[in-house]
Structures are given as structure tokens and as C-alpha cells.
Length: 505
Image (cartoon, rainbow, N blue to C red; front, side):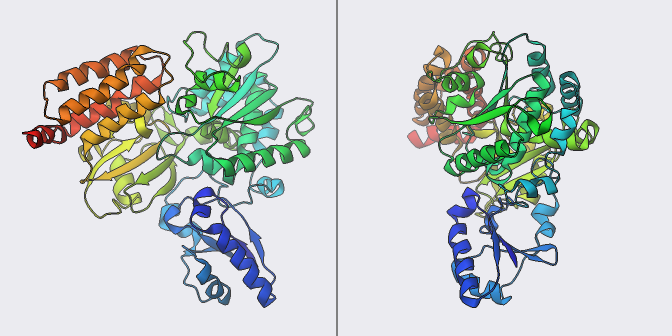
């Protein structure tokens, strides 16, 4: 009997380890031959721990399962959710990047290959660097870390750079509130990220890679380090990648907890052992990056999507999406929401469909007041904007940004002035201090919002001017994007700012 119990951090936080131990103990006491496989999460967090039983090739789900449910589970008396693939939240998805997450044993390379793994790398090995870069370019893949910059252009810049050494750096410093997709990939399908980095290395001529992984992800760190060790042992990494005669190796580096190190130049400084502060551009990291050498810096989701592009072809991937937003986006749903978790779908789904139909509205049952997309620096979108399609250009036109596609939902009890203040305070705390608009502007922003809260309406134009200065003058997105949540809160929810004046009077 095969029983799957997730090893994902979210599932473990909800008792998955205890459930797995209970299944083994109960099975041993009954003399039942049970194989417990620790898979990644399917991303339906409200069902965790989600236990799956393999019944004649069909994975049947049970959840959330507690230790007390284990005897009934083994007796066949615990009510099931039916085939996992048919659960509506999962059935509505288009899983490309996350096709294997929750399906396979994350550290079983044979299982990985049986589900399409390494097919992309084997194809890439037979191609030239220019052909590899062309494939990525034609797929339309864009950065999944925030800016949405075309991946092919970045790779082509590094390919064309002359240097004795080039690097691939994976930005796994997933610091945005309401985001967890990178962690899910690293814990649930680590070989996919390794394969994507190897393809990138072959494409641009880089022989060394680094994953910069945030210290707050101990489980992901452990899984990735073991996956790298096993990949190297199997010849997927090293001086002779899959017997090709081409070299690529990589290692895991752990960050020190700075949010700003999610910005690529701060990350590179930290990776070099320096203080994590932003570098001025130019030079671009693609030309002078890690240790001054040409460097591809991509997010986990970008690199983890590369294998499926090479397995199925650029045209297949580009066939999904909307306009210039090609392929799929793993959307992370969190906050005051009924069905929180990861939902991968092609670009183009209206925001309202995602919030109301997929996520089921608020957990509190109260009306949705605002949705913040793109982490703590993302804009707050009003229900009047729910017809906005999920796409880079479409969100930009609506005054928002997709970022890492974290979607945090708030009901009508949320105070948007307080949320605007939080954005400024967050920036003040996390600023690296390199530039004045961010370092000083965020502190003044908190002070100005406090004045508005005390009833000083004359401070509102000052807040607007301050946001313009931060947006135009900051060196990186931390200071440059903080005005998005502040100004969107002020624009879409002016009553929350006016009420402060009334309360003061």
C-alpha cells in the first residue's frame, strides 16, 4: 500500500510529520505492509495534511487528516475527497511549472525522470548555446521574480559577453508576504530547479551556479542541498553533465535575512560576502555580476519553468497566456480567504474570477474590500477593478503590478490608511540605506501618514509628492514600488483617510 504524506513546510506546520509517524506505527502494529512516500504539497493548504492513497493507480485524497484519523484511514472508513486530480481547485489549473509538485518523491531522481524530468536537459545538450537562448526567447518566458523582464534577452546578453567565467545565480530569497511558490518548488521538485539552472548554464556558457536561499526556509535548504548532492552523484551536475562533455556545477548559499537581498544587485553583494546593499546600474549584472563576471540572475520560478519549455517546445509554452504574458503563472492566494494555496493557470484570468470563484471569497464571509497583488510593495486593487486580466501589461494599465504573483485578500474590516502606513514602515525597516529617497523618504512617509491619521488633511498632497519622489528617485524597487500600495490605498479608499479626520474632530 502506497500512502503519500507531504513533507512541505506548510503541511508539516499543520501536523504532517505526526500523521506520517502515526501511519507507520499503526501499520506496523497491524502487520500491514505500507510504503509512506513524503511528497510535496498539492498547494491546497486548507486540506493539509492531505494524505493520498494509491488505489489501483488512482491517488485518492483524505484531508485534513489528524493523528486520530489514522485508524479509520487504514480501516477504509475515513471519508475521502475522491481522486485528488478531480478536486475542483486542482482540476481548474494548468500545471506546467508545478506539474510534478505533490506528485513525486522530491528526492527520487528515478521518479523525477519517470515524470518527464531531464528530457529538457537532454534536448538542450544537443543544441548550441545560441539555439538554447533562442528557444527560451521564442517561448516568451519572462522573469517571475517581479519585473517581468524577458528571460531570453537577459540570457542573450550573457551569451554575448566575453569572459573567462560566467555564472548562473538563482534568486530564492522569497521575502514577499503572501508568497510561497519558490519554497514549494524547492521542497517538492528540487531537481526541476537544478535542471533549469543546468540548461541556463549550457545556454550562456556558464559552468557554475548558485542558489541564494533565504535562511527562513530550513526545509527547502535541506532538500536542495541533498538534491544537489544526488544530482552530482548521478552525473546530472559536474564536469561531464549526462555524459555530454559539458560542465556545470552548483551549490546552495544561505542568505542572512535581508528583504532587500531579493533585489538582484543586493543579492550579488551578499553572495560575495559583502553588505547587502543595492548597486547602481550600469553596469548590468548580465555584464558585470557575481565577482564582476557576466551573470544570469533569475528567480526560482523562471528557472524551474525552463525544463518544461525544452521538454515540450517553445511553441507549446507560448501557446498559453495573454498578449505578451506568455505561459502560465503560479499564483499564491493568501490572506483572509476561504481557499488559500497555489493556483497555476495561464495568464489572462480576470482577477475577480480568481478571488471569488477560485479562492471562494473571504474566510470571514464578509465582502472583499481590497486585494493586494505583488507582495508588500504591490498595489491594492478595488473590486471595481476585478475585471482586470492577470497579465503584466494589463495590471500595469490598472496601476498595479504582478510581481511574484502573491495575492492577499482583505475584507471590509481592513483599514487602508493603516495598510498604507505599514507599507512605508516596511520600507523604512528594510531599506539598505544606499539612496536618500528610500532611506529618508520612507521614514517621512510614516510621519506624514500619522499626520493624516490625526486629522491633518493638508498632509495628503505632501504624501503624494513624497511618493512621486520615491518612485522616480529610488535606486531599486524597494523605494520605487512602495508608493504603489500607499497611493492605491489613498486613491481607491479615500474614505479611510477622511474618517481619520472625522475621528480626530
